[in-house]
Image (cartoon, rainbow, N blue to C red; front, side):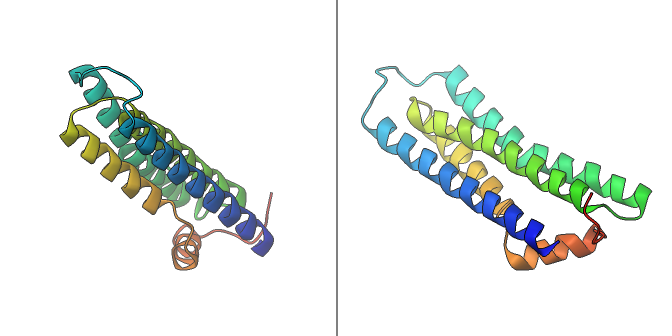
Length: 147
């Protein structure tokens, strides 16, 4: 199980670094005024809502679903725990793509700042720190058997 946790942590860190690189690249490309558009309501709202839904709301819903599953089964297998972590990471990836899109195209400044803040919160929530992984393994009652 230790090797599986290391693989999960490695995949999460690589994804987080790539997401931050994409957001930084979008910021630099957006500051060069690649698109000569004016900020519009639709782009601003779509970027903000996509970021908030996928980076904040969906990981919370995924966590609640797996908490309920844990209560019904009296614990999760490591395979289910890995699925939980990967679904949360994938959701945050989609939210970060919306934030990168907001950085790339002209949007209202307030919506831009909120979407970047929501994306950074989502990225922080899936960071695989040792302390949080041990806590999650204990809370979800993950068994040592790997299916």
